[in-house]
Structures are given as structure tokens and as C-alpha cells.
Length: 132
Image (cartoon, rainbow, N blue to C red; front, side, top):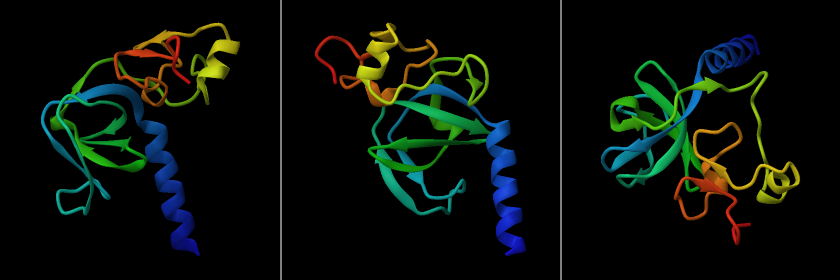
């Protein structure tokens, strides 16, 4: 039980230190279960894919096609500057409908509230007309 609590506290501390940004894969890259070259590969991400990442050290946490994992930071090119994962100025929209209700759709990549999951055609604009 004590080890579980320590591991949870460590994970929360690391998450607090991480920052979220967007980045593009510079080559086809493996998404790994753990932040290590020996971590099991859970998905292969094609070159040029736009991702939302939370990086710390030489590894970035991200998701691709519903699978979460880690990717080496050296395989990513930053698109937007990092922003805190939580706190003042952070916005999250669960759907395009919520974004439209807030009066901010469509939203360009780099703006607070943009996320890849709402950019169906991956062109850098979330919740354009016709996107759900």
C-alpha cells in the first residue's frame, strides 16, 4: 500500500512539472508503454502526425489513435510553445458543440483550447464547419 501511494505521489509530481504543447513527428516513430527504448511498442505513429504532448526530459507523453504512451523527444518537432497542463488560462473543450457554445470555434492550433482530437482533418483548425 505504501509503495502504491509513493508511486502515485511521484506520478503527480512529475505531471505537475510536465508541460503540454503540440509537436509533429519528424519520422515514423514508436509509441512506447514506458519512457524507455526497452518499453513495449503500443503503436507506430507516421511521420508528420500532429500530436499533443507533455514532455519532461528526453521523453514525451502523448496519445495516438486512443492509445497512450511515450515517444522520444528527439523524434518530435515542436509546433507550439509549452503551456501549463492546468491553472489559469487553460481551457478544455470536450466537443465541438461545447467549443461553439463558448463562441470560440473554429480554433487555430496554438490557441488555448485547441486539441488534436477536435481537428478531424488535421489541418490545424479545430471544429471547422462540418466537423463534429
